[in-house]
Length: 355
Image 1 (cartoon, helix red, strand yellow):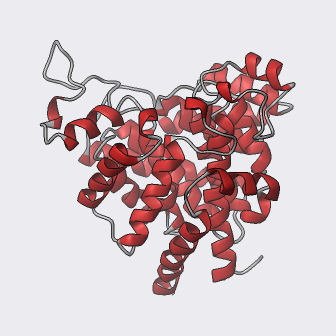
Image 2: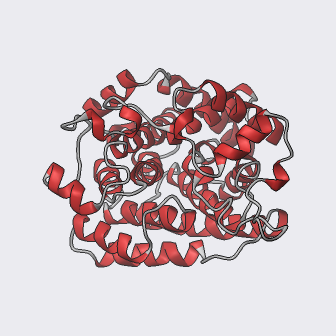
């Protein structure tokens, strides 16, 4: 088994960031489309960034450009680096507000993040946001969308192999906008899966087990410290998605089955299990993983980004096709390599402190 080194760790952290960005950019061309439309347009699962018409992209992004999903992930990575890994909820909220006012991707914000950040920026009481007009309780669906999970990969990247600390950091970043046990289970699943994927000897099976463990930990934190709402178990729905992935004879059959059983919408209970499912269906291969995520339709950019963060952490930057990585670098005004280097410094310190 290959030993962990700072060089290896850096390559896998960069791989996770790059694969997430690749998935997000690829899925921007297929968001809100059906699997049938995608297959008919591209002759099968989408495997490239240069698609026939830029009008099919979210908000007319150029090929390789990320959406709000990975733009927020980059912001989280940068904020962790600026605070030397010691991120507070207050600092993260301030960064999110700044992002919501200055980012070119701010118009793509989701149905939970947008009203909360607008209210916070205006100094308003956020306790009424999302409240049912018929009661004092917040709507069951409010705070259960996938905004916390879509940006969470850096929480796992700074704690390689330590899923508990990764999930604890995930809660700090999730709670301001997604304070439910459902959203936190989803964020915990991705953070834990990414954290474990960085370790030597990790494989698709062990990463999937880490996702399940992270979902359990996240749900427990959400129940204990957040808001419990009605809804299905993230753990069980990940299991269902994985079962469908393992039964399917190919990627196309897998995404059809996963959509039919767990769904592919902006809701955490659908998109997070779908992301883990396509990761398993692709055997962790980076291009196959993001292709399956981008081709599953509906909230395809988010699903492909989350799945890509797992696959990239597992295989490193060597697993990301170099031509596609070059397109992603060229299309975005963020220095992904510098972010990876900063996160690597934090992650390596974590390893040294634990030694």
